Image (cartoon, rainbow, N blue to C red; front, side, top):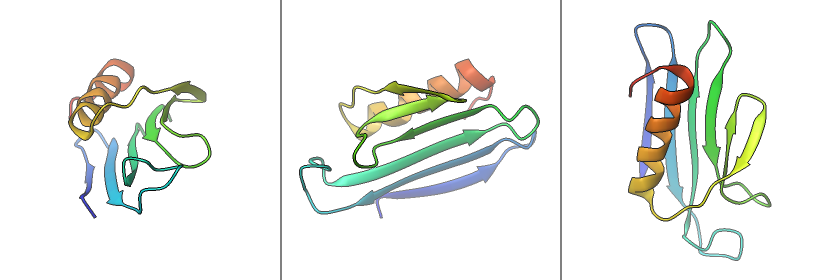
Length: 92
């Protein structure tokens, strides 16, 4: 496991970031899977970023699914924090 961090913020928002190593394969050429989740329990709004097979890199804003152009893990976390702030008003 490269990263696992789960927090519940003062306003009740739940933030969970997981990145774990997997064998390099066609579906996971970078050698890891990730799941980054931010949920506002009051509104039900959410930001999710993941790369599960067969969809590859993508993110969700509530019920919308959008492609994500992955470059590296540091940028992934920065993008997740920005999306969480822009969409939920939550600063991580």
